[in-house]
Length: 206
Image (cartoon, rainbow, N blue to C red; front, side, top):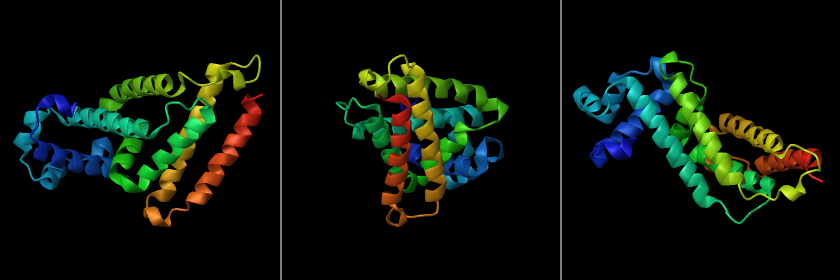
């Protein structure tokens, strides 16, 4: 990851910003390291001094930005909340806010999440699996399972709930791409989130 490479802070910022935008717009295979170094205003030699290959840059960037994004989300959460729907509602709203505030970061992570290039796909998949496992452990370790219906598989129920809202967050991202924060109808988003919550509560709660 970037932190362990002892990169000059100014160069690090320029590399992250340029690589994030270029990879987000073009995907892994079509992204050009020439475009990255041009935008970052560094030489190709400097880029490959820090990263041995385009693949290493891409994977390192994904790990760094995923960790940073997750950290920012967790900072905003109420760790004392034990209701799974209240927790996921908060996570979804926080992510949605970031769609317009950090468009390149979100676009990169979304693109990487579905990246099919064989050169990086396996490593991204492994990291995604680890991130999801960590998210489950962090978000749901303290939820009140007594609210779930008797005899229901709580773990599978949580997975269904989690992926439902992940899908919704991705849909909202597409809507938010071309809008400023002020143009986003927060009430409409909240209404849609709450409608899903009520439906899922009927399915899984007593």
